[in-house]
Image (tube, rainbow, N blue to C red; front, side, top):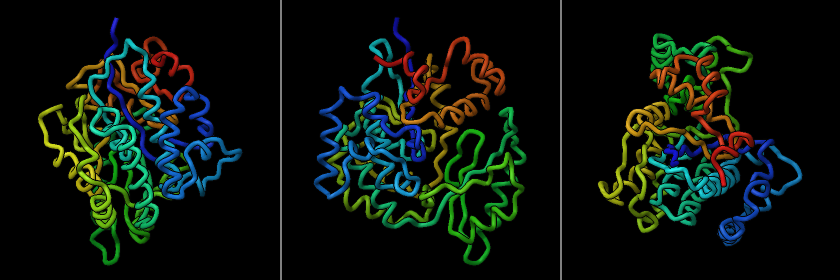
Length: 344
């Protein structure tokens, strides 16, 4: 019996210490794929993906760099996408932030090698420019009830800070029950001073992250368009849901518009991952939401996005955990037990 699924591709911050060795652990049979990526890195004088994955030690300063994290995450996720069980029918593909590039490859709009070129190039450009930074702050209760008034207040605070001279701050990613904010040092510092600390970790700065999905990234977007040709792109074979919640239906959009959205719009405008997940649920009604590895950190944001629309009666953290224990609806391939449910 076929199981329908929406495939969700991860963004930055998902290849951490626990993920070191992910490729060798799960994808020793994908040698041809990984070797092709290694050859592309070798050609530009970069350390190979295989060598990075096989290192003895994980270093935050190294492995959070855009030119290191991005290719590792891409290789892990695209290999996972190719390892799904035969009874899984992918009805749509989406991703979080950098995960949009992976989604393009998983949906067939980019070949695996073209997708790697896009990710590796954008990861390099982001690291070279490293404009601004990001932080994360919650807008929900600990039982996953979205506080809409508080969310509005926080976004108003962001807008107010951005009006100050030399302060730049804006929404970067709407991430389930979290707001990812991005801006320059003055803007981020002002927000941190204005909000109370929560759960002993928020507001949380993200290491080696630039001000993704804001106008600060316009130079990076322009450089990406200059280096990455439309010829890399083709028509998607599966429906894609982008960072606005818009569905790209196979055959309904031009390659030029997909290229321009990918290397302009989504680089410089906020990414609404929450909306993408909710559209996936409401428009495709899948049996499963499968999150490609590495890591498992995106599972919470997916679950929180579903709770916000009371998907199949999921009205909070407790209801979601009960459902997961009985009949999982969100499956993270970075979790060995969950991976076994959906992989070959």
